[in-house]
Length: 213
Image 1 (cartoon, rainbow, N blue to C red):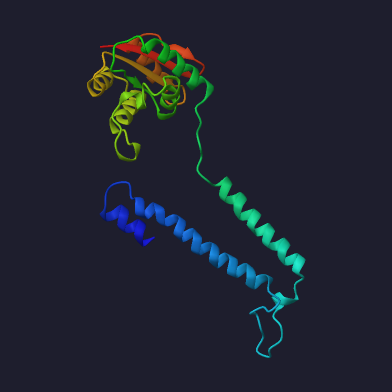
Image 2: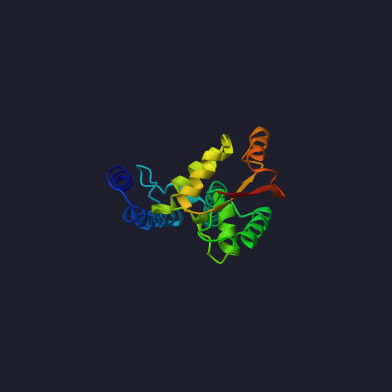
């Protein structure tokens, strides 16, 4: 905990040391867990009375102890898995939209420009053979893309030509594709975007616009 506090409070960068300490902490925790299990299964339990009689743990049958350990480990593993990070995958609609964008955009002069959320851009990176990475927006430490995120959020809330002009300025492109999904925009925002750039090409829940400078 101290290493995390120092790293994130007083240093910059990707904090490799603090991240690598996770394995060390887990190693020592496993040792303590193993020692605790050994004490629990041991016939000589530390739970003695003052008279020296055996503790109550030593009176539990060994089979029940093993069953209890298996149950606790299974419960801990299941709860950890269930509460773990929520992983999002590229959907079929996003992948199909990425294929459409790449088939058209590869005929445009470089540099490319694709404004979209992270996951559709991963699909585009795959179908383009990494010729378009991260929509061709700058990528900084820890894969941060503040320009793309700001422009995409702006288009998702208050669509305006200035956001696309910003995308042109950042990428240096003369043609930019804008991809969004129904879950990111309201009906009012969608109608405003149609007023700006015309009708979209729709692939399932994904909307695609081609915008020229």
